[in-house]
Image: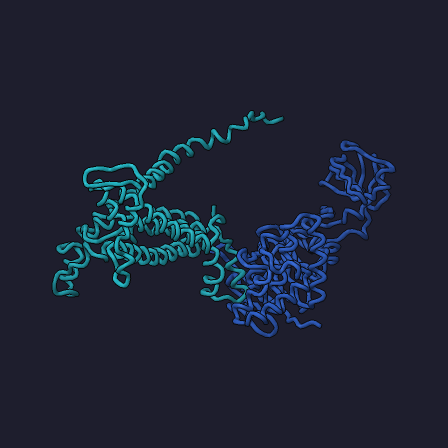
Length: 333
Length: 296
């Protein structure tokens, strides 16, 4: 039921009085994709989103939706809609009027616009709250109303600016699943800005890791986690040991290394020994950090295995890995 | 690391509220009560007697209802005061709103915003009598404005209506009271989340639609507070009308002041009570339209 349109960014640049926030990025997002823009704060992901949304002028390049460059067009004409970080619900309007706002602006009659607003409120299971004011709703409920409001213009691309950051951790995971479900049911493109790699991995069909206004890597979450292109991606995604090996920068996933207490060999092709500096219990597993020659190493050890021979910080230990698990990084630009 | 326990007696809040409560009682409640009481006293040319008669109120509206198609002096005076009130309210509202809008939505830097806001309040650094009197050399028959207009040939003879006229009174009112309107509206506007304006744009609203559907509704409490300031001041004013009107224009405040000068305190008090009731009715009507508590 995909009624979407492909989005293409061509050398899109944003500069604010001399400083470059987004540096000539190019990206293609197929219709119906759940795309996450991921990166630390200040990496240009929000500026990119706001340029796609039409809330920020483009300094250079083109944004193409479908077969049309939409530079300079207002959001409704582009076919985009945005869900704001703090939801930006109109505090003086009821939930129903909030959702129907855009139709009112277009001059749609009261009966028609309320009928469509109520239908969308049913979709997000908020129809019971139609007469309430936003201040009378919880954070999760406000988010659903914001979602309904942004869907009323029938956008082909929905833009979400850190939509889960205002929620507590438990609700965040619940709303995360709901966002994914809505995206699947609606069949439109979602572009979701986040700084949480866990959130991006859980949601994205296409994850785009950004740093310093550039795209470091774009691909499926599995691709990005298992085969990070650069040292930045490996460090940002976490769970990687970045190692200098024979003059090359390589990475070995922390769950693929073997860990052995004491100075003995960990039974692997490459072994480094050192002192345990931290032990962190995480339920399924235990994260052990080792201060070894050549830098810090981390091992994710299965819980049972760790507690069969537990270690304390300060103890000697070894971490080893096999050549098959080494992934070579390309030098960072 | 326990914080030192604050030993507060249950009377502490009352002590803390006591200073303002005492000032409020001594300088507002007691005089107000005295005014109401005196408005029912009897007076003659040479005496004032405590009593409880409604004669003063009857005198205020003497013949007003009998003559009704024609307006009595009291009604004419109220009408004139209300006319000033309405004109000044409308102009200060438009000027105050547009100024605040410019400051709140067009100036991006908070520092510049605050600097310009300070500039708006600079007139308050001088007394309002000086601010009024300063208009006289400008607007008078031989004033700068007349000189300028004559020299450019825009008028052929000196104009009398610039000073000591409805025009000069209105001008002085607007000059003096626009900040009272602008400050509460600016305060309301600064509380509007800028993301709401973006959300309206995202929904396809034009600038005017955003103004009408988002900004004005959210500024209503500020507009109401500013309106109360302006309306209550203009309704009771007699100094501005006196100075700028050349003591020739009637107002309710002026009537009360004249009666006080003749030591006719009971009728002055009755007039004051009538004015108070009228102003309270206007404020009550406005609070029915807007929930001011939102702003406090």
